[in-house]
Image (cartoon, rainbow over all chains, first blue to last red; front, side, top):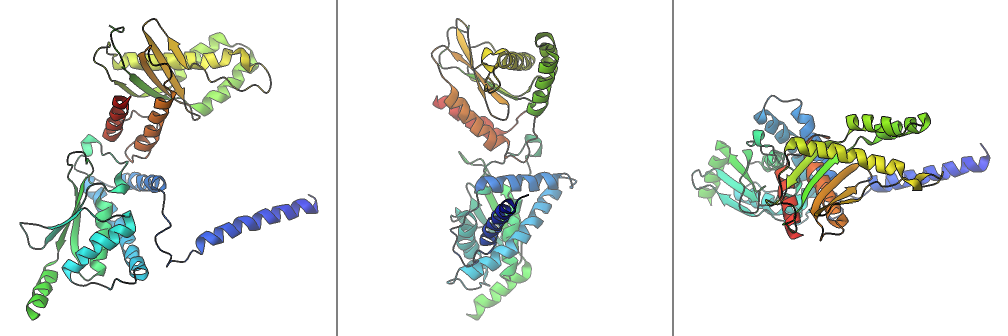
Length: 207
Length: 174
């Protein structure tokens, strides 16, 4: 190999590594302008489900696994939003936590607010966050024999982790509730722990 | 039966095994026997049908077996057409794209082949002269709603409600 060729190779190499470091050295405080392509995410998400599917016994097991993966994402999302959103302070009241998830987290993750936040009419400790069109589930269609499976379990995992980080641990589940023209409408149901509700009551009366 | 319909499309999509096929192609050329071998093996390796749907009640319904046969046969003649093309003689000639449309007295079959070897076929009446744009859109739907669906296995029939509804919308918009 001639020396010029070697030099050329070397040049190419440094170019590539420069590009790589530039990508890796992005500042975390950079606002949300960097977006991940939905297609790329859809492939990763699909592969997560496929991978998990071979390692579970049933639908509930699969949901639990997705929930677990979501939790790991949620912890990191929480730290990142706390770091990026200078105006937000760490919430510890139930309602403020919910609003934080509903607006700030949803905007950071999906670039929009969740479509509704409601309190259950039956139980005081249950709240529902509804997303009419969860963008990460856009390409998912659940086969008929698995109709009880809700791919939103991943989102509920994220929510569960964030609720826990805000000192309001809750059991979070997701349910697909299709509506006219919105086949993937997903309801995230949060059921807060007993001591959280008790603490709420104490804080309320102490005001 | 066939003549009375307007704006009717029934579409097929099937996949061919691209890599295997090209290796096969070289062997055929080397042995110099094009026709007889070509037909036999093609039928075995014919692309499997992965989706079939009728969008008109006015045309005769194909049974799933007939659809499979149609897909297999079409695949065969499609490949054959691209092989016997006189334009592929030279060393630097581009490989022919195969059959694009088949005309009969009453209807026309359109074929759109993707670079990866999937073929989308639509049967329409004679008023539709070029369906490439629409079939390309079907390809987009396929790559979105079939390939990105975690419950879809490659080479298997597409069973996705989203794909069904999107395709329905697309056909209705035509």
